[in-house]
Image (cartoon, rainbow, N blue to C red; front, side, top):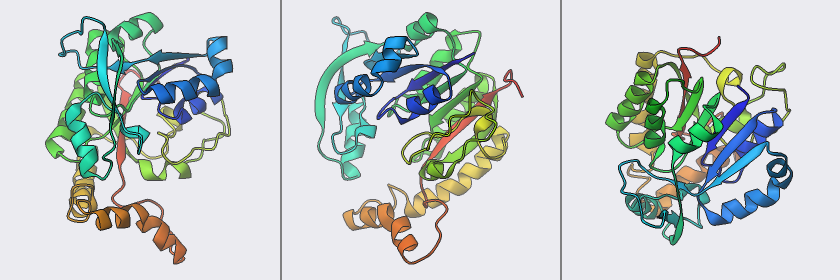
Length: 288
């Protein structure tokens, strides 16, 4: 199927890659400022029907429906990637040094209804702060599942990460890759492409990068990727956002700039430490 869902469009870099590779894209975004930017950037693709922009915030199904169909969304002007519908996540952002929060009212989006409208995609990228697992669990309502999905992996609680992998396994995903997001700009699209068309698109830091059969690395079993994440979590505890360094302004600055500082000293830094990861998953029914 020639369809990709970009859940958490943000600056549009992921959608731009999917479009360049010839896919039709349904992109979801809640931040009104980013939505305006997307309309300007992708005017031609929206007009042609290759890109459908769903405006509003996906909310957990357990939330009671608001009478006016609206939901409160917390914009983070200091880091637009961290917009969220969860008030408790704004506290996390403040701890990490982003204290400016703007509250706006946006439309509540029913993800299941959008899947019924557009169809089950070939690939579903999920990156919306705090609601990734809720989006994933929505797939349980459908007999067909995306061949590939990715979510921003949990980095504070190992039990929560295990819950993510358990949810993926119950949905029929049996192969996994933990992808270091701080080094996706080093990815190179294979030629010939194995997903869609070859685009030659330059993958930028901050985007989600390649997916599916184009994604570099070896697919792992659930147990294998759990072992990998155990090692990753040790690095989180030593150098992550909630470590001794990560909880202090000077430490956060050092962690954010360590790679650049080492490169200035002439040392090659293939990926940031500890970085952050997405979990990519391949369904048991996916084509080899």
